[in-house]
Image (tube, rainbow, N blue to C red):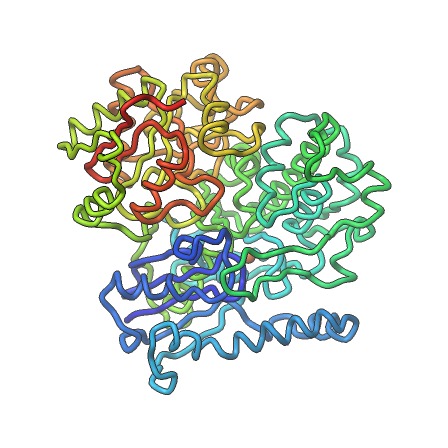
Length: 582
Ligand SMILES: [Fe+2]
C-alpha cells in the first residue's frame, strides 16, 4: 500500500512517500525550484517520490494532506468576522486546498477524474507529532510540537503508545512560542522568513539583561503559556503569512507592536550595526524561550511518567534549548525529526494515515536523513564533462574509495575547503554529510575564511562539527546522539581551543553524531581525518551559497566554480584546482 504525503500552499512545501509503512522518499520542493522555503504546490517533489519508487498515480491508494480547515473553526470564524482581510486570505488558501486533487493530477499529467486515491486531512500539529513519534525508535514516548502557527494552533502535546497517539492539550492562536521568537527576530532587524536561527546564534554573545521584560512578553504557567499581547500586533491583524504562491519564499507581516519598542528600546534597522544591547536582547529572548520550553517538557515528563520525548515543529530546531533537555527535564531520550519544520508534515501526515487511520503496526525507524534524490556514476561523469572543469585546468580523477578518502582527508587537514557530494540528498534543512562543505576544525581562521570565500553570511553565526558518534563523550559534556544536528552541547573546556572553528562563542557546538551505519562513507572520511590529525571530527556546513542546498551534480559544480572552494568530491570523482584559491 502506498501513501503520498503532501505539504502544499504552506512554507517548506514538500512530498513524501510511504510504501507499506516504510519511507521510500521525502524531499522539499525548494531543492528543485531553487527558491528557499518555497511554498506553493510541490509538483517536482511529488514526481521525484513516485519516480524513485517506480510508481504512478494509479498506484497511490491514499493521499495525506497536513491541514484541516475544520480544526478550531469557531476561533477562525471569530477572527474572520473581526478582520475582513483575514477572511479573504483564508478563503483564497481554502480555495487552493479544495483544488488539491486537480493540482496533483495536473502535476502528473493525469485526468483528475481518474484519481482513485482516498484523500485524508490531518491537523497540522497532529502531523508534526506523528512525524516525530512514528520515525523515532521509541515504542512509548511523550510528544511535543511547537511552532509559529498551523491550523490555528501553535503547540500540541500528548503521548504515543505503539501505533497510537493521544493528544493531551494544545495552545491556540494568538499565543505562540514560534511567533514570540519571530516577532523579536523582526524587531532585531532580521526580516527574512526563517531568520530566527540567526538570532539564536547571536544570543550566545550576550547576557540576559532584559530577562524580566521577556518574562512579561512570554508568560507561563505549567504546560501552558500566553503572550503579553500588548507587545504584538498579529492578534489584531490576523496571521499575515503569504505562502500560497507557487515558487515564492513565504513573507511574514510585522508582528511586534510599538509597545515592544517603547519598553525594549529602538527597533534595529536591518543594515544597522549590531550593538551589545542587541546581543543582550537576543540572549534574553533565548533564555526566556528555554525557561518556558524546558518547563513545558518538565511538566510533560511528570504528567506522562515517560523518559523519552519526540519533538517537531519549528521550535524543535532550537538546538541550544534541545541540548539542555537530557539534563534539565525528566527525559533521558530525545528524538527530533530531521525536518522538524513544516516540510516534515508530509511524512507525519502519511504516517498518521498508515498507523492511526488504517491501524497498521510500527515497522519503520528513521535512522538517517538520506531520502532525497541521488545520481548515478554516469550522471556525475556527464555533469563533470559538460562543466568543462578539466579544460580550465582542474584535475578530475576517479579514485577507489580508500585512496579517495585518504586524499580528501589530507585536503581538509591541509586547511583547504572541500565540497562533498554523495548519495541521496538530506531530508530537512541540515547538510549531514551528503551535500556538505567540509573543513578543518582546528583552524581559528576557518570561520572567517568560509564566510569570506564561500558562504557570505553573518560573522556571528556558528559553524557545526560532525563527529564520530562513538567519540562524542570524549569531546562534549553530553553524549546523547544528535544524528540530525538538532542538539548543541558544551565542548569539553580543555578541548575548546583545539577545535576553535566549530566551537561557538559560548563554548557549545551544534553537533552531528555520525555512525558507520547511517552514513558509512562520511564516517570513513572523518575516520581518515582522525588517522591523519588525531581529531575525530570535521567542520560541516551546508553545500550552498545563500540558496537552497545543492541537489544535482551540476549545481554542486556551479557552486564550486562560483565560490573559491579548493576541491570537490562528487561520488568517486575528486576535482582539485590547479592552484589553491584564496
Ligand atoms: Fe508547523
